Length: 221
Image (cartoon, rainbow, N blue to C red; front, side):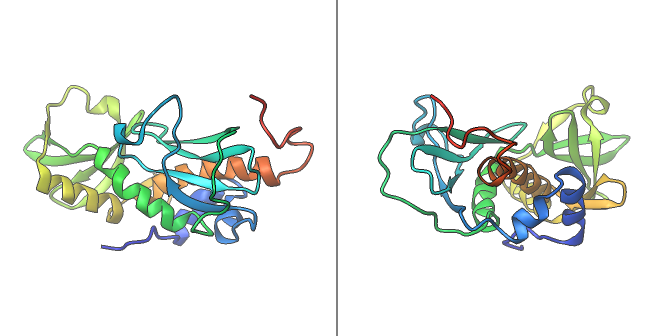
């Protein structure tokens, strides 16, 4: 099993189409951004109440807490940019890009994805990802995946699979590709990486965009 999300031509094409400008953000990371895997504690949430990991982004602004909060359902990631008066000895993160920390975060997040068996005309399918209006589904006979609207599967009986099968589902999210757009095939892991990149790119534009784009570099309480 590969350990790092693959920045192949398909993922790069998907990023170029859906998040214009993001490829340079990923392949040539901004010098003022460093990253760490951490808990972004908001609304009195305590670390022991969740095992989901977040991406903390150090930007050189000590008055602002910046990062990407990991969610257990769609949209899966949400950027955080709020005043922070807490004292923190950390001034920079461990990583210089988003790729490795994403892999650590994804390894936990993927445990929240479904792993459900559906039988249609004696043919077995497994739902391995729930993305709001759509599912990522694997055909057990051909071991191929496809992206389909959830409404096509609502009335079908689903059976949640056990631990060993869930480990297999998790592997499939990293390895089996489906067509997300015309002639663009990516894995579920790559799709989630693109979602996290979208939120990180928003912060990049806040800190490194044109002055006309954002009037303030520090949010107000």
